[in-house]
Image (cartoon, rainbow, N blue to C red; front, top):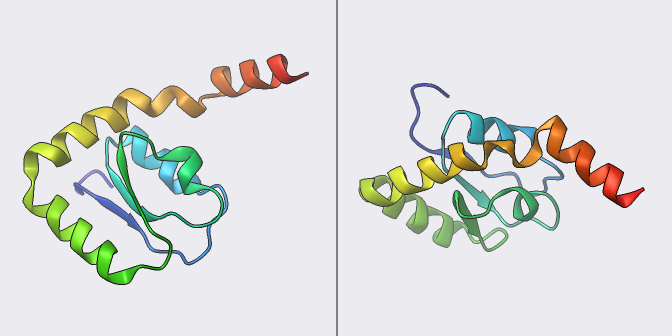
Length: 99
């Protein structure tokens, strides 16, 4: 991940993909299908959610992101800024609030 500039998640189904959290810590924008669960709860302003199983749209958006360095850098900055969203401290706070 350290030598990458984009992470692609092409799973047809995905629950809570830990790799998407790892992307945030590596400051990588993620491009993922908006599968029924998971990615939509992790990716916000730090990546791209593509209509589930829309291969043409995925390819187009990925190609566009490869060419658009400014957008890629902004998404990378957001990913690193959002890395604490799922930290133990934040998750425990949510559990405490719930219980």
